[in-house]
Amino acid sequence: MSEHTLTIIKPDAVARGVVGQIIARLESAGFRIVGAKLLHLTPAQAASFYIVHQDRPFYQSLCAFMTQGPCLAMVLEGERVIARLRDLMGATDPAKAAPGTIRKDFATSIEANAVHGSDSRESAAFEIPFFFSALEIQPGPAARALIQDEGADSPRATEPAAP
Ligand code: UDP
Ligand code: MG
Image (cartoon, rainbow, N blue to C red):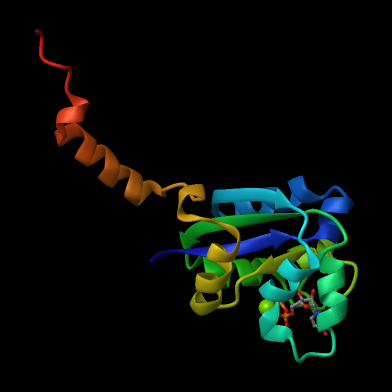
């Protein structure tokens, strides 16, 4: 079943100019980009986004890292995209990431690890609306087909009657 996930190309990867290479991997995997925005997080926004980690020793440093420059947040759509993105990203620590994963190839440390991906449906349900309103997410093929079908039957789709 098709689902959505949130990914972030983190400030380290944006600063190093590897956004295009990372997006190419996401598209090659068949993930559809249905929302995207470049933004520079404030400390309060980073702290809220990573609130689940507030008791971890790396929390303060992580929040500082995420505010050091712009990042690219995206909503991806695809079959099992949550788990498949996590596989494509690789382990949190690039030293432990499998060959061919994004983190293996683009991360520089366990903190500056190039990408974020929601780890579950519950996380995605918190993280997607954190960055995107419903209006900022493009409908996928299934929703588009429905809209087109409705449009064909609707009076708005017909020419106005001659006076
Ligand atoms: N992180 C860190 N040190 C650690 C573990 C995590 O700096 O020991 C950072 C890293 O940027 C990671 C983020 O905190 O991506 C969130 O951690 P999580 O355990 O959720 O890893 P992820 O889901 O991103 O693989
Ligand atoms: Mg995580």
